[in-house]
Image 1 (tube, helix red, strand yellow):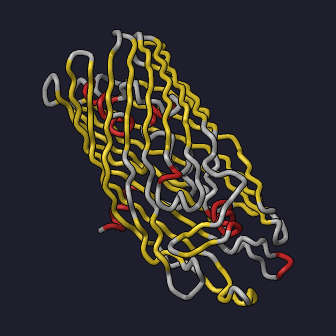
Image 2 (cartoon, helix red, strand yellow):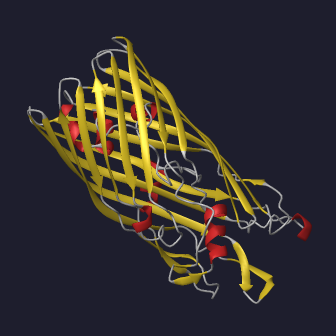
Image 3 (cartoon, helix red, strand yellow):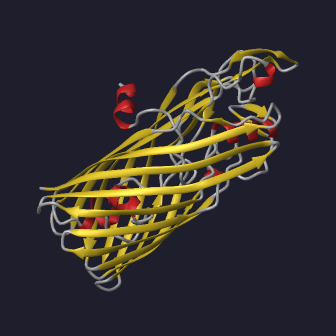
Amino acid sequence: MKKIILLSAMTSSMLLATNGDNLISLGAESRAMGGIGVAMPMGTDSVFKNPSWLADVKGAEAMFGATLFMPDVKAKNGNANGKEATSKADISLIPAVAHADRFDENWAYGVGMFGVSGMGTDYRNENGATPADNKGLSDMRTNFQYMRFVPSIAYKQDNLRVGAGLTLAYGALDMSAVMPTDPLNPATYAQRGGGMSDDFGFGFQLGAGYTVTPEINLGAFYQSEVATEYENVFDFNMDGRYDNLKLSQPAEYGVGIGYNNGTYRASLDVKQIQWSDADGYDAFGWDDQTVISLGAGYKVNPNLELRAGYSQSDSPIDDSFSAATVGGTPMPAGNVGYFNMMGFPAISETHITAGLGYTITKKVGVDLAFVHSPKETLKAMNMQVTNEQNSISGALKYNF
């Protein structure tokens, strides 16, 4: 049953990393506007951005969308022959489905299922037939996929909105690499991956919104850490037994301010992602991220809105690595750096976005978004990795 859930929510293996390994946003409306939504009502998108704004939905509505993600990741290991290789994990389709409705004039609810996080690379068959061709990438293949199912409820009284949601999360992790069978005799190698491992996790999210004037909104949200553990996923200490890895998605919190006069709207969000406190990410040395998102929309006519946005954050991975304990196994700094750079290079920092929303009929509308993340480069320990991303998102909205 778990495999069916995974395949229905996420397909393929690739690097979904944007803010670390989290998408900047889920719905096409928010993605076109830099990932905003903390202080801006987004209809069904608010299920995940800030559940308090669900209180502003006018009636029953549904969203069916998807994002085509196209990362371009390249790596080279100067400790081998230094030849560059391109990761084959270069395209994926990520669905998003949500529904919202009102109970009465004060209460509303929403529910959404989203593929929200993921990362991975694929350097299989890059070792070469001879030592001179060995690119030192260990035939590495990593694939992390993560989805959330979030039922939420919201309440509105005068200018104040509050909301809360439960999070049911499902994650799947696969790690494989060809490594020495004996650390003292690197001439012998074996596959060290334990195959796909999966787990469920639970958490919650809280949100608040306040309408200062009819045009100006303030918003705040908190999303709890969600703990998961992947059993028998990789032989980290090369003792012939597969080890478990705790890898918890981090807590997030943020605030925002929004403006909407009916023709122009704009919003600024600032949020913090606490990678350094999350199991697994702390061991691999990930730093917390402060993410700044700016988005704007211009209504050309009652049916068409043009949108644009910008998002900026520092990479959670830098060029210094420390020894750590991963999967219960001591890991030297060189190995921590190698796994980060070759297996999980979540180094994207900037996102430039654009899109539109078009109302086809009173009940049907479409949203489109394009997101470009310029190439980032990380060099450390005589290794180098680059990551550039493009994505196209679309969504069909239906008002009942």
